[in-house]
Every structure is written in structure tokens, then in C-alpha cells.
Image (cartoon, rainbow, N blue to C red; front, side, top):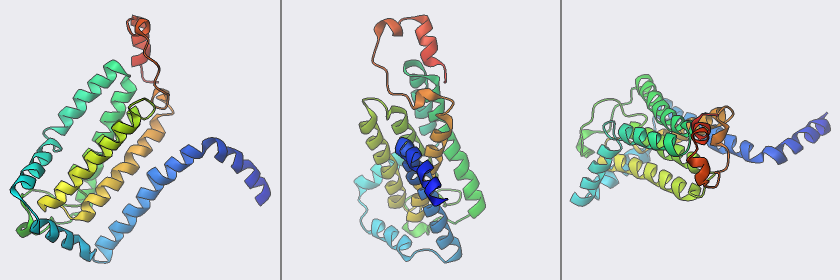
Length: 245
């Protein structure tokens, strides 16, 4: 029996090992870590280093760093990030496909909705205002800035992964998400575990979304086609490129 199962699974794993690895590292792994950290916070009392890291940031603040962190809060916040997302989505719809555009929008919007529901469910108070630079409303867990910006960066990486800009865009997207998360801890408006869970949740959400929609919108998983000026100027060609598949 075991021999038959092994003989059936091994060929599948050889062909689909990248997909299996993506499911394990991109969805299941982050969800397991999120469940563990959440259980530790709300059932076991949390981590001592959560407050210690905030105290370290508070002791090393400078006017220049604080100004930069405030700017990041604005750029990655609800007033600016949705506009950036929509502008990039329109550009993707025009130059790549509507599937890429919709994927970016769904990734960021879905992460935002998940964050709101999680905050209402857990209702974790924000850190002590004595160690914070800003006073922000709402609950702390998980970090909304981190979730939205991580979803934004990871989604862009997946959009461009099959093309020549795959690695640069992916690295920039992850770096942006981490920078936003660090800035939230620096400002003292979120615990490090808020940022950690927000980041991991967005990884699981965006990768899971990608695995689902790529079956319908196969252009998401297809390699980037070489530039063809005749095709790009053809009305029929533009219609074919812009249709989600």
C-alpha cells in the first residue's frame, strides 16, 4: 500500500514541486506561525520582548528618523496607499492585463478587510502612549499598515515574477513591507508581534489568492512574452492581452 502511494506521489512531486513548496512556505507555514503567536499573546500572556523592543526604539529615536517614520505612516496609510494601488492597477491593466490589475487590487483590499475583522475579533489595546510618538485610534492587533503594505509588495512581486523584473520588484516589495513594519514599531503604535502577525497573514493571504486565481487567470502564471510592436498596436492583440484568462 505504501509502495503504491509512494509510486503515485513521487512523479507528481517531481512535476509540481514548486507548487508544493509555495503552498508549504507561502500559505501553511505562515498560518501555523500566526496561530502560534496569536495563542501565545491571548492565552499565555504574550512575549517579554514585545515591550522591550518598543523601549529600545524609544531610547534611540532622533528627529530625522521620527520624521521619516511619520512620512512612511502617511504614504503607507489609508489616504495614499489605495491611490497608489489604483494607479498601478490601471497601468497594469493597460500595459499587461486586467488579470494582473485585479490581482493587485484584490490582494490589498482583501488584506485590509481581514485586518479589520481581526482587530474587531481580538481587540488588543495599543502600546502605552508614553512610549509612542503618535496617538492612533483603533485596536493594535494585527498591524493594518503592515498587512496592507505587505500585501501590496508581495502582490507586485508575484505580478512581475515571471518577467525580467521579477527579482528586483520582489526584493523591493518585501523591503517596503518590512520598512513599514519597522516604522510602526519605531513610532510605538504597534507591538512587534502586531507587525509580525500582520506580515505573515498577508503572505498567506496573497500567496493563497495567487494559487486560486492563477487557475482562471493563467496569464498570471505565464512567462512574460517578448515585446512585439505589431502585436501591441493591433486592436485584436490589445483585447487579447487585456482580457483576464
